[in-house]
Picture 1 (cartoon, rainbow, N blue to C red):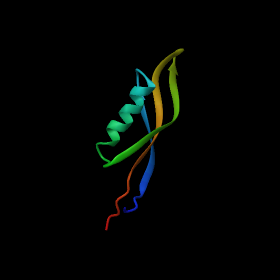
Picture 2 (picture 1 turned 60 degrees about the horizontal axis):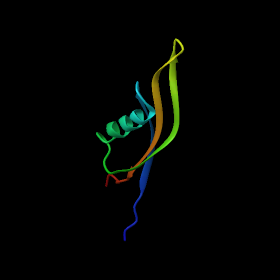
Picture 3 (picture 1 turned 180 degrees about the horizontal axis):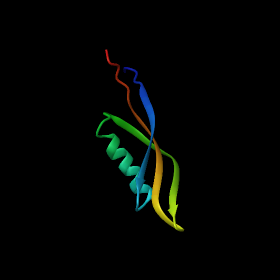
Length: 71
């Protein structure tokens, strides 16, 4: 079996509805420009509050994808 290498990046997704939708938005958007996504790990969640109300859910996600060298 050949060895594989994976790159890990952090992205933050947002949603006005939930942390789950913010995380899903992150993966869906990343999949438009990154190939072979493997694992998404939620590492942090927070909220934006305006006038005493939650307006935005934010989810920080670590994404891993298979690393392919340019050569």
